[in-house]
Image (cartoon, rainbow, N blue to C red; front, top):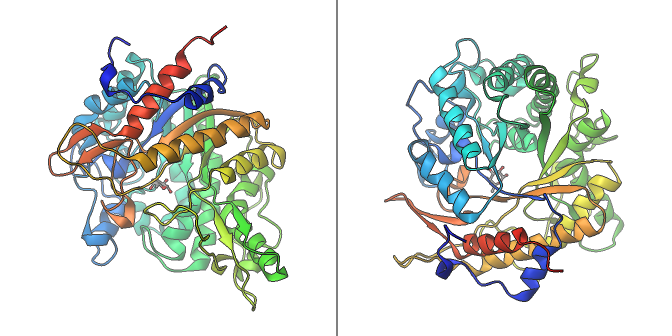
Length: 468
Ligand code: FCB
């Protein structure tokens, strides 16, 4: 307890203490962040332009026109931010690397200063005994590659594999845990389909083509990372899942729920785990399948060492009387349920079911929850505390759901809360706070919220020797 101010640690109730004891020894506890959301310093040390810089500078795309130019200034505060991980008592940290820092034009000349930043981060983490989980792509594509078509261009898959190798060669002697892509569903559909994310293209056919190239890039990168790192390294992908539940038992509801599941979950899951797009998917989207070259699906389904699961909520589907496209099913809110500031339902049970399904139905062997968390409208009164009772409750209930999945046999190895600190929430700018650490944006002051203190005391309990 030496480094901890005992007065600041939330006092766990005995059910929380019991919950902490249900997790096996060696279960990995962490927090997650992403480069564009926290780093800022967009013009420093040779960083190139990313599609998010361009998108955020385009009028009308982001709430209040906000951008990631400064965000929470992590690029300059990295070491102090990592101290917070130690203070909370976390064993692992999931971060992403900004491709345009490392290859400012997407390919070609390597910017050593960009690599140096992550090199220092990894050394600092290891010095603290914190295991780095490195994500290579969390949506900040170099603009130069977008200018050549971005993910709709098959060449981008190969450039991604080259970039992965550059990073793996530099950090592979110290980083063991690699994730290729974060949520390629979002990169493809929000980026190219409905245009809500960078690069802001609204073309559903482009989205399914981009999806294929993202998946191909993933598969190519898995091999390149393995070739460039020691045999002990482990490579996975992070997918986002929104389980779909029927609101009633009408036949059209059952049909549309299956569509929602195919669109939100199976579109990326099945190529990776089975080497096929879900049967009927392109028909359900009324789109042409992407151009699939010979061998692509084998590359995409290269066995991975683990799967990262991002989950925040579920969808409840109410069938439409006339047939709809798979990406247009109607979802409804559940009377009496709790919704976060994102208007996402709090439904921990659906995470349990999802984890069990990934194991039982898809045979996924090593699972990590790589993101899970909640946005609530935190209020700071200028003092030393942020009372975010709803986030404490969300965290506790979702950890109980994770524990239930373990009891039901899901091979779950760790959990990362989204996010360590409040940050830039994409098209919603700074309006949504997900951190277990509050950031006062004008002063950049960091304050551990009650949820962070709760996590801290939960982890302190978890680390105790089992009571005989
Ligand atoms: C996920 C993203 C992450 C964050 C959370 C709230 O989809 O991976 O960057 O924005 O949602």
